[in-house]
Image 1 (tube, rainbow, N blue to C red):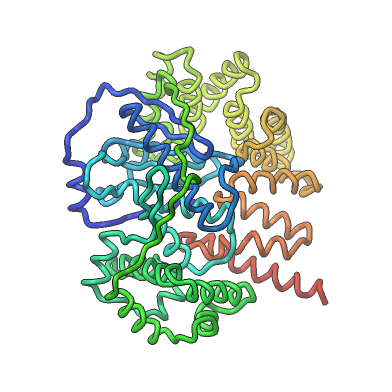
Image 2: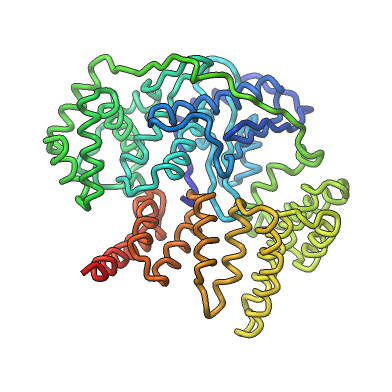
Length: 502
């Protein structure tokens, strides 16, 4: 998935959230690390520790619900940045309107989430809802990367996002206030549309909001009763056999879309059940706290902006800022790397590479610097002839190879290495496929890596595997043009797999 942006609730709720007591501007950025998360925040250590513990409890809930092993370390932790207000959010994402309380980003540069944090009061926290919603997506793609219909992808995340978590106990199935308000007061969309369309296909904002609300309600209906849950499993089996969403639903439940609407309206008027889990499995997580780099207070959020891409109008000011911060912190590797990324992206490439060379002279194993140097070398020859491109890509491969050697689990390094190989006439070799699939395994949420892995598998005539990888892309409700391209390539892969089997 490239980018999921959650616009939830009414602007009034956000305004209320942002209006409550301001915090001191003297706070310093700190890092909390757990088994599955790295969390940055500039509030108190107690707030940061509590937030990290809560995230670990949420991961435990998801694993417990799906019968998975508790406490298993991931290949890569998810990094989350907690900001105090909308102004800070916009430093990472200038496009974020006042109705956006957070976002999730999965690109070849990084995978992270940013949200306005809970203020510790009784006000409904939009930022928390977004983080839990997006982590549910993140978790689903990591462990259950199948071709789900769009309603289920969103309904699943909505269902778990309202979890109430504390040590020794978890409650799932409670409603989101905005979704509940929409269901009780708005005009429902047709269930045939719900089962067959994605949220972005609805033109009116109120229809899109209702799409999320009804997706949550349908997921809740399935999850809250053991017999319905069996029908839900049958529905997924029918989808796996290639049935479309409507016919799969009718086969599994016996309901037409019209009958489903009546059933869910009746269900909504009942006392909606929720599930409570108690036990030692929901133990307090171990959290280690450490200070962020000294330059983080000035440039951490800007570094996220740079990773996601900077508009033409923002480039001069941001470049000037990174130059000034790097000058003030000459021995701070984070400040220097952020400056180098800005120079290479929209400043002076030679100046940026000079910064990277100094970083690598001080620390030859700096993976971020090695990957950025490899990317810069490739980008620098994009307008060259074939011979020039081959030479530049081979120069890049030396840096990417060093990065992979330093850490074979870093998806950025693996993907950069494969990019340097893609220009070779022998691509993809077995080693190329192994590296590409390792990058995909470490970051299954990153759509370009999934796409390139599927394309390489197609070239290697491993059509069935390629079709499997393409399913989440094809069904991504926020996938846009890539989703459409993935659907076409998936059909081609399935056709060739069928022909090969005959």
